[in-house]
Length: 80
Image 1 (tube, rainbow, N blue to C red):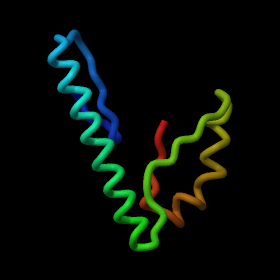
Image 2 (image 1 turned 60 degrees about the horizontal axis):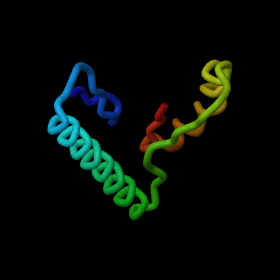
Image 3 (image 1 turned 90 degrees about the horizontal axis):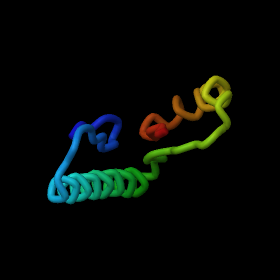
Image 4 (image 1 turned 135 degrees about the vertical axis):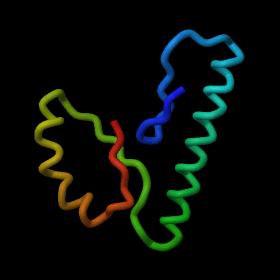
């Protein structure tokens, strides 16, 4: 089990019990993100995880559009 960018990444072969524990851990991480988002929202700051879907060429163009937004809202995390 490896935690990167707030996402649980599994590699290898796991038992059913291991899969259940991994799912429980992922649920806990999601709740932590939700609590952080609510805390930031309470203070009036924009915060949370932003996920954007785009065509394959979008990964080259989207950073140009998002640079100013991310600078203005550092508590917003870009997700994939």
